[in-house]
Image (cartoon, rainbow, N blue to C red):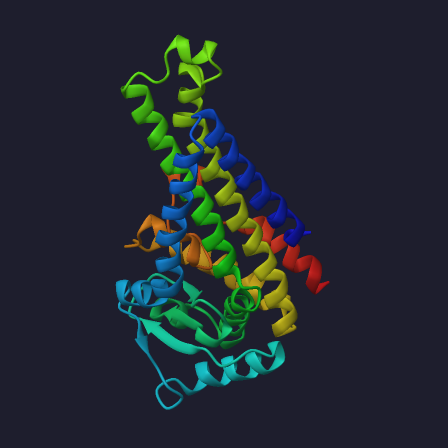
Length: 281
């Protein structure tokens, strides 16, 4: 069901992009915006792992430095039939974790020192299974596609704003089949908001899917369920130095309150726990 939902949401995002292109009446502008968005997110797709790991000062650890962590990941990758990812530890009191990398052969899994000190080994194993599920499900590719189309919508909205400034949204445009001022306002305001909401919905859908896949990999849904509850409490009590553009990568939302809660990239923890407990029983 999560996979079907993701496909439907990606389709809706694409339809939104085409619709906005028609609203501002420029097929060439629509094509240019899409190409630019794909190029920008292509760079992000190929190099985002290095960028985000450096951003959070993650340090690679080998089997000698973190034998228990390596042992758990090696066992889980064998079950999931995945290559062994590179493991990183971040010196950060905020309990959290994320996976990155453009494909399973170039994957990385990073955990914070806060997570390692807060959770039991069983719970850490559940978190690692969740992150490996993101790798197995190729969620980074899916999120990149969603970001590409959403970014193109944002660019078209900027073009609509420029068109309004230079008077292309006049009443004459309405009479000649152009976008008109109302169409430009919709493209400027409503479309970017809709694109953001759809992109957030895709991210939440992938989190549910990673929970389910991770529970199958670990064969212990309750471990992840317990871990999520502790991580949510720990993240809420720990100041987070996290950029909003990377918040969706973490297993629990590191940003709390205000608009960050309204446009959350993560589904509610109680609902995630409810689904995992149903799997456990």
